[in-house]
Amino acid sequence: MRAEHPHATILCMPVLRQELSKTVGNRRSRIFILTAIILMAANLRPTITGVGPLIDFISRGTGLSPTLSGLVTTLPLISFGLISPMAPRIANRLGIERTLFSGLMILALGTLLRSEGSSAALLAGMFLIGAGVAIGNVLLPSLIKRDFPTQVGLLTGTYVTVMNVFAGIGSGISVPLSQHLGLGWRGALSVWVLLTLLGLLAWLPHLKQRHLPDPVQGQSFWRSTVAWQITLFMGLQSLLFYVNVSWLPTLLHDRGLSLSLAGWLVSLVQIVSLPGTFIMPILADRKPTQHTLVWAVAGMFLFGYAGLLLTPGRIMAIIWTIVAGFGSGVSISLALAFFSLRTRDHQNAGQISGMAQSVGYIVAAAGPVTVGYLHAATHSWTWPLILLLAVSVMMTVAGLGAARDIFIDDVAPHRAVRSGGQP
Image 1: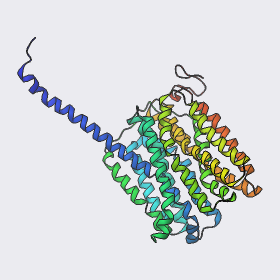
Image 2 (image 1 turned 30 degrees about the vertical axis):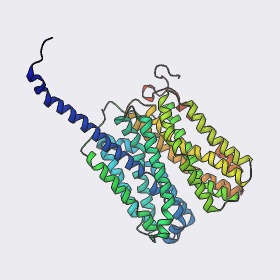
Image 3 (image 1 turned 180 degrees about the vertical axis):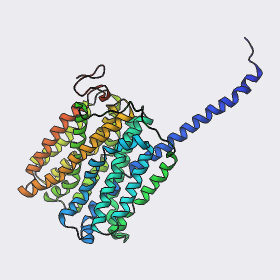
């Protein structure tokens, strides 16, 4: 065999070192962006879920009427609906990284503003919080689709699980922070700005990146049947989640549980459902269709609400609340996974995310109000539960359409599917 030139290896050493440096640099960059994603996810719920347990203290402290007190928890959902479609457009101009950083800045401003003490500042702050959270809600699926296209299920499950963990922490520690540590409601709400500042620090290294989309990419899906099916699944499962959080404690109290125990039970169900929340998008990513998963989610909601409707008593109410609560814990993961699974690139994932969350959260905002009205008008849970069963059926129909093996990018507003799919 021909002997290799003795200087060849020496000459290749700089190239080898350069390649190794790139590998190490890429690994470090992925760790940094993953850390930033996790901290962004951690900021998406506690500033909102921490308000509910303190609403009586907030009302007394600001002089809000009962009607406006309800608006405190509804305003972020309205803000979600208004800001969500704008997030992809802003990202198209600034880049995803800078837009997410801006969202955290808006979130920090809103967190501080609402603790100023006046009712006007409280409501303005809650709207800003909703705007900042909406940007994260919409763009995180797009970012994951762009940077981790082969790990969409794993990372979606991870960030949704982190989001739900901090949602539970937010509702669980608000009263202890306010009462036991003597921070008051203003201090208990403003403390979350520390987590937001940590998120801002994590995103700082990424501001030099400005990934702008190819101008020929990115589509509008407002005339797409599949996009509307994803949107309705997102909105209807969100409606059921917010109804569960808002009204299941009251229903359980009416069935014989103390309000404190009922509230803790609903929170505990969300914690118990975390493994399912994490696994759901991983399972969804493994198969071209997700019909089985839609039926599983639908079954939890349908059996839970039907059980609450048909079987009286404290023990059965607890059992059926756990079933319905588990459904609301895992359905959000599947809804968010659809944004990436039904699109080919991160830009279109961002577009469908904006559309689905815009319409979806406006739909969701109507849920607690409607259920509250029906309960007050009938002095019964019969019609509210019948309504929730009907919503569950509609969610199932929409979810089965969204679960088809199809890319929205390939589908004209009226027809066409990807190879192997069904029209």
